[in-house]
Length: 332
Image (cartoon, rainbow, N blue to C red):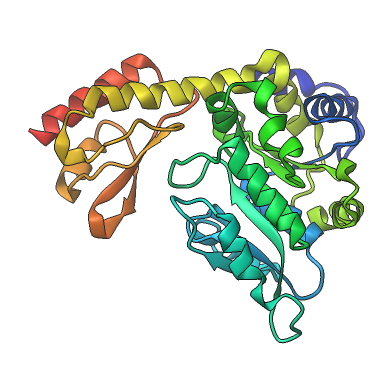
């Protein structure tokens, strides 16, 4: 909020041409390498759709996991933009190279949408994490099949913290072969805003074309902030001294604290520690309703009575202890 207040003075050029925005663009080049191109957007869904729209040619479709945010939680926004989703089962919420091989079966057929774009979510919507080697293998397969790779990084801070910190960021993004990243901020403490980050330094002509089309794709998907400095100011604060990674690590640590506090309750079905900042226990509906009096959480799989507990960048040990005590009380 202080960063927003500091930016709210005098006049500045609109649409991301102000001094703060230029500073943040340079910071993203420091993070990902020279040639990186960044575009501010309002939110995660819009950012994903704008990024994918810039990559897609006529008849192209997007290969994604059945658990991807694109498919499950974006209210058909990609489809509304004309982006058909080609859903594959994956394993543990993650696409595999075999999924891409399966999707590629109809490449070249004019009767089928062409799987030219792969979108992966890191970390996934079921709390799993692509390893560096898994991202490399997927990107190698995708590029070998003539596809480009988009990474939905709404929780990229959590993934970065879990994989070793900012020094590892490039290893599972640009250096692994990812072509475009939606870099999240809203789930990591800022008021609003995400960044679409393109990596044309690979020389891939599809990505180079996407960078040229990006301003129009962003505008057409209603994601162009006229006062871009208010998004930029938040990212300037978030990126300073790796605050974004520290906040992701705090959220991850809180999830592990919660797991350790209640994992002995067998009815919850928590068998493995969280990879990032989410837990998926089994909680009967009546008990879940009582628990929500302490802290809100979403249902996840109603048929199995599985819910999702998310910890956040500002979750404290006291918050965890309070919720864990409520769990024990409600579970009897």
